[in-house]
Length: 296
Ligand code: MG
Image (tube, rainbow, N blue to C red; front, top):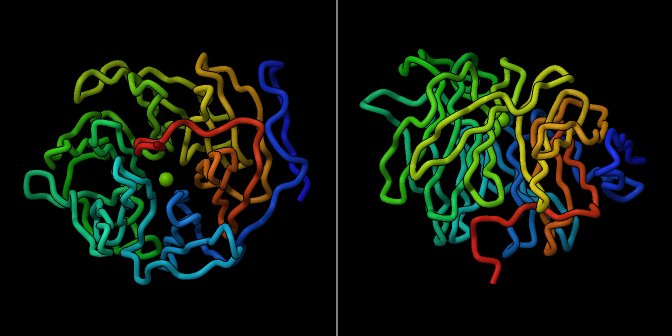
């Protein structure tokens, strides 16, 4: 499909190839794309179908990675390249160990079950930050219908030692999140608030949290940063790209609701987008931000 990139600012005029590739089109609601360099693969989630899929960059084949998945939504890699996943169905954050076993990293706060972890990022100190809206417990579609046990939808941090703590408690439905390049700031989407907020990261907590950018196409979901610090955000009309000063620089229009994105490929210059039933790929003229694991 011909890429429809609309530049709205002269600072960001060329974003990628002339054409977008559709890598997969048989999902129900795709989410959580993460590029795993060691596997030369993209792992992504199909939440209602309760499975995770894997697109092999070398063969172009898509196969089932894990089924059932516990309705996994967001995925990322930690500092050792291990897969960290938000399980909406099991209301937990889990890590896939190097031997393939699963370790639960967070499931309860003070004896009460989390709502349904949605998206997750890892800081270079090894701490894990995630959001906990209720989308996995409001119906059986994306998880399992259940009572909300925690009063509110918060942003959490798991310390390198495994301690779980609330770091922001004034969200309606926190969703996608991403650190700035130097990790001094954390961007967090509030989906029904229709905006992205930006916090200052102070040691193991957050301060500030003013609105960074409003959404002009219904609502935001996942976000990622590129190597220049620009914020790429999933919306209902495609991706919106923001300068760190908050200016909307451009839009990549897509035919379906977009849920999330990631940068990948060996050079991190390939964009992967999950959009309703499809995964799209676009070769870029920019690179994704440095991941938390060591690139060597
Ligand atoms: Mg999300």
